[in-house]
Each structure stands twice: as structure tokens, then as C-alpha cells.
Length: 301
Ligand SMILES: *[C@@H]1O[C@H](CO)[C@@H](O)[C@H](O)[C@H]1NC(C)=O
Ligand SMILES: *[C@@H]1O[C@H](CO)[C@@H](O)[C@H](O)[C@H]1NC(C)=O
Ligand SMILES: *[C@@H]1O[C@H](CO)[C@@H](O)[C@H](O)[C@H]1NC(C)=O
Ligand SMILES: *[C@@H]1O[C@H](CO)[C@@H](O)[C@H](O)[C@H]1NC(C)=O
Image (cartoon, rainbow, N blue to C red; front, side, top):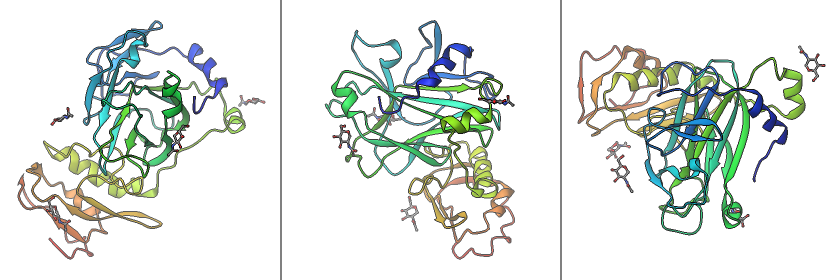
């Protein structure tokens, strides 16, 4: 197993995990057990793993037809090769401590015999590369664990192609567990001792990301990969968006040409003050055009 923090295992038995009947926009107090790619909720070891509908908007699902594997490993969600990142978005309480565990069992789902290689990303920061080759050869699933402090009201766990991803190989995930750690069980001393890893969001998260989230919500049909952070990590922006990645990450171009978008442009667009290019033709946008005069850098409209 690539990363095993044995001391953490005890938490799993101390912290009860509530099951939720269906995805809900409010944070689950205990966390989430998600059976990726499943159309139904599944019991395993007395715990209910939820179907992933409602927590992600991209990818395709498939089943591994083997009788000798755990229930949560029999389904997976996979994401086509490409520059975008593919995310699960989980409502959480800002400031909460979470143990995130991702589990991968390839099972030859794509008809091949080599598991694809890819990155996993949390809240816009690349967490690790996923390489399950060795485990898969030995008939094992692989899991990765990390502890993070939620910097916002959603926690984004994403997959993306990296330099090791072969052309046309799809990233995939079998299960996603996000457990809210009771702050009284493990105080900050414990965390620094055992290597608490905080995933920092850049200051971009404030204005630019907010404006783009509002734009996403104003559209009836936003592009599928508009999940997670619009610009981060580097090289994996939302479709149609280009970012400048200096000290401050800024959106410099928004090209939504020909996406048949339906909806309105929110007035918050005026907060994208580094925007140089804004292309909106061949869409079905309605309503007033917001006042874009604060966009001093705008060269192409
Ligand atoms: C994946 O799903 C999309 C729709 O979400 C569909 O257009 C596409 O054909 C599917 N691809 C595969 C390989 O099943
Ligand atoms: C993935 O893991 C296998 C087996 O441990 C190793 O041979 C291979 O070099 C790794 N690939 C990358 C890109 O790290
Ligand atoms: C945190 O844990 C350390 C030992 O792990 C203990 O010495 C300390 O008193 C604890 N602090 C609080 C605030 O509980
Ligand atoms: C904008 O997007 C359209 C459609 O995706 C593409 O044809 C065009 O080349 C893009 N323009 C720029 C400047 O990237």
C-alpha cells in the first residue's frame, strides 16, 4: 500500500460514520463514505457506502465483474484523458479536520492490463501521484490517506492526467472516504507530531474563484469539468479558462465560444480584474450584460 498511516486506523473505529440517504447540500456531520461508480448504496463491514451521484458531474461508471472482491471495489468511476481535472465536491464545515482516503482497484476496467497513472488533487493542490501498478500485480487494491483542514465550505477531491498518463488512459477511482475527525480526539499537538498536512488554498480563492463559481451557478449547462478550483493546480484549469500563475493566480482569459451556454452573466464578472480576453459568442446567454468597466485589462471582447 503506498501510504499507510497505521495510527489513523484506530480513528475509523472510534468515529461513527453516519450514512445519508441521498446527497444533500448541507455538510454531513461525520463525513462521507462514497462508493464511486455505484448506482446504489452498498453495505460493507456494517457501514453504508453511498452512490456517488450528486457529488460529481463528470466521468463514466463501470462495473468489474469479479466475485472475489469487496463490494466497494466492484464499481468505479473513470474520467477521460485530457487536460481537465475531475472532481468530487463535498460540502463540509470550514475549518474542520478531515481524514481523506481514496481507494483504487483497477480490475482491467478499460480492457487493458496496466493501471493508468494520474494525479490526485485536493482543493487545487496536487496531493500525490497515483501508481497502483505494484499493488494491482499482487492482486491488491491501493489506498492513500491524508489529513486536511477544510479551507472552504466544500472539499474538492480531484483526479487529473499527469506526465506519466498514457494517451487515452482514463483516471479512475473506486471509493472516496472523507471522515470528520473529532477535534477533541486529536489536538493540534498530536497533528504536528504525526505530520498534519494542511492543503493551502492560494489567495486566488477569494475573488476570482468566487466570481467563477457564481458564473457557474448562473448557467444552466456549465461545462462538465467546471469543478474544484478554476485555475489550480497548474495546468488543470477549467475548460475555456486561462490563468496567470504568478504570486497571485488570476484568470486572464475566458473563452466560452460555441459552448451553447444557457443562462445569464452575473455582475460579479466585474471582479475578474485581470481578464484580458472575454469571448462569449455562439451561446444562448440572456439578461443584461453586466457593467464590465472595472475590467481595465480587457483587450478582446
Ligand atoms: C461517457 O459518458 C458520456 C456522457 O456523460 C458519453 O457521451 C460517453 O460516450 C461515455 N463514454 C464511454 C466510453 O462510455
Ligand atoms: C509505477 O510503479 C511501478 C511499480 O512499482 C514502477 O515500476 C513504475 O516505475 C512506476 N511508474 C512511475 C511513473 O512512477
Ligand atoms: C494535546 O495532546 C498533548 C499530548 O499528545 C497533551 O500534552 C496536551 O495537553 C493536549 N492539549 C490539549 C489542549 O488537550
Ligand atoms: C475559443 O474557443 C473556440 C471553441 O472552443 C476555439 O475554436 C477558439 O480557437 C478559442 N479561441 C482562443 C483564442 O483560444
